[in-house]
Image 1 (cartoon, rainbow, N blue to C red):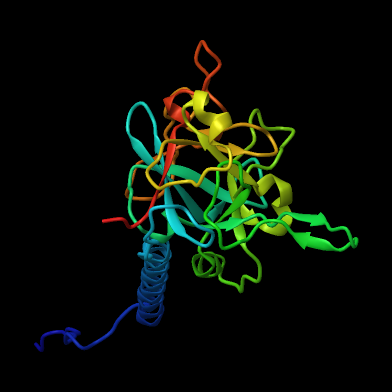
Image 2: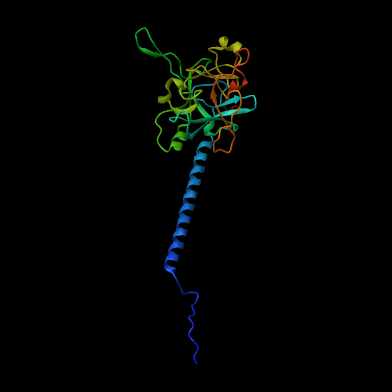
Length: 277
């Protein structure tokens, strides 16, 4: 009696719903590769954005502050020195047309920390009725002079991924819904008068006699927002500012913190810093 035939399949033989199974497996692999590629691209874009913010800039070399100088603004809070910084990746919560600013523990010549000082040009009427410029833009900055603090234009353009045709400056726009004026970086045409600042001697007793004197680097000052009259600082206490940077960032405020004698406290004390080494 012959034995019944047994179907024996080799390892190369495909049985069952092998077409559907292969298609499913290939679809899963394709989806994985697409997700991985997108993740790699996203990670590369994030790193490129960080590199844009952290690209080093050459600071000015001088003893006195001049228009067009590239400088750092250091806040000497009671806890630690901090650098006024920008991040053009994220719109400000209270002022969506502007982008966030903060106080950073990193004090370096990276683009996000560096500002170019631009004097506000004051004009007056001459005897002939023509408008004449009253301040020589090449003269050193003096106590009481109005100026803008301009961010690096190339940094802003790369962060926004579009051409930038006007200066982006630090400002404190008035927002009805916010308890204090937010400090943002935004186009000058949008901020106008709310982008004007001036500096005064940190020692209140020397402010009146110091008006008109040249501003020196590393000299204790207060940075006053002209429109509101408030000084830039960190408020009563340092408040952490959540942002995806490798440094500790804190909230920046346009608010004068006064002592019992109605004088600005250390949390409003700033200095301008250049490359004076």
